[in-house]
Length: 218
Image (cartoon, rainbow, N blue to C red; front, side, top):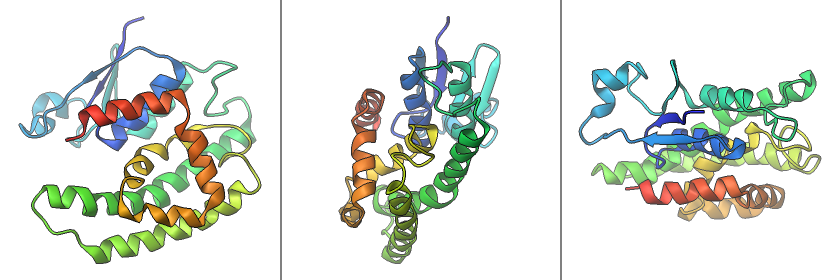
């Protein structure tokens, strides 16, 4: 089976979300770099793959996809086995819970994390001053999400239940960068969340993708 292509650098969290799914299922893949400095992401070739000029884009034969969570679901559906069923398809209740917590990750957790990351690392890299008010406001938003997670994780090993799912894995890219920032101490107030993250970050697939992130981050 030919390797699929993932367009974009592993330094980007949305690309990383796809890569960790590919690693979990053991699929072969090729990372095709997109040169942002040369504005390759706004060129006609990449826009044909992702009309918003963003990464990732994904190609599997004649199929071309964009949007990292949709790509991740495709990968996990295509390579689903009894041992690796990270969407819990086949069980309507469990798969619905995966969807719920995926929505929470996308709409609550990721938005706060991304705002902090942008202000702390991206804005200074672009020659701008980080907006500490935006950072503070989003740390407070993040705490509210973590309050919910802490309560959930006192009852279940993972977010969707007592099984690992995409809802868990999808948190790791933003969290990896966050844990290297001075704001990471906020996690100390959430022991269940800390334990959940420790288990998540110990997974071989996550470790492999973190190594790729380190190589690509500039």
